[in-house]
Length: 396
Image 1 (spheres, rainbow, N blue to C red):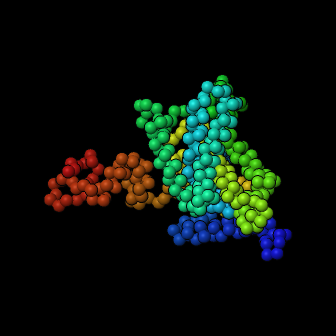
Image 2: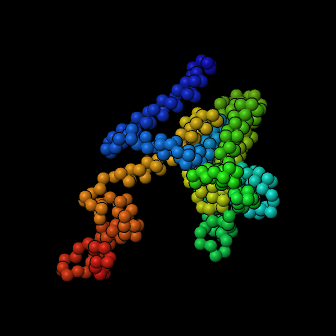
Image 3: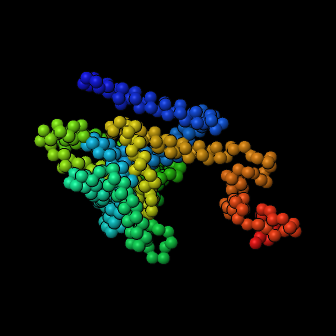
């Protein structure tokens, strides 16, 4: 039991998140019923798609890895009384550190280079988080406003750097060259290349796992979650962070300097978000490319809130959101394949997904354009009418 008026830990950390989850399931079920779908069937497809196969588990853990990092990023700032909404930009800017270390120091052996690239990713993320923290502590700039602005600054800066500095000459794709390589047959690892589990299973056990981007960074995510718990609840600086977030006046009375704590908390928060670059740039994509964060920084806010800003709860919430991401993808494909056909034949369907699947995307785009009135056909009739397929008429 806590103090007077406080909820027991099992209620605050266990019962309330569970009730929130059940309420969300009920609300979602109502939406499914309103659109004429069976919520139990949809739930079964999602669970089977995310946890019913090795491939589903692999993708779920891959998504959860990013969400653990960004959830911890938000939680550390929350404990200091700050709302860091800039995890997206901090994770994006950290890719610059990963690429600079991975490409600039590729002559180093991988046991030295991979730790250096991990540190570089965290450092660049920490710098991008420290600046808003400094502005909040020294200039009074609101942390929410500055971190949102830094998201846009990071996005624009990375587009410029990747396009004009990292993109190889003559390459159309806006991305860097590959960071390292791995020959699973010879177990030859070069550069800052973090192999995925499929490559490792082929090289070590000659067993072919389903293809997925899941890599060893997932172990780093669990290790970092434990380290954040230890940092916040077993160290002096962690105590000071929680003291400032709980009561700034009392913290000042105890000799704690809130300005210093704000800058430290935001730097640590940004460094945690920067580890997303390890999973994406070094482990999944093996190159620096545009928008690789894909909204994980914003999902981390929901993960931290649902996990009650506790590392253990954040890990569970990240797994849940990973399940929702992977299961939702499977659900979208499954329901697209089972939509009822209109017209009763295989030759045509009014549903755009089926039309695109059979006739191809160019035909789908052509038909959509004509339905919008974009072209009229010259036929024997004097009255203009929508054009049939391009092979059957002359369009002007």
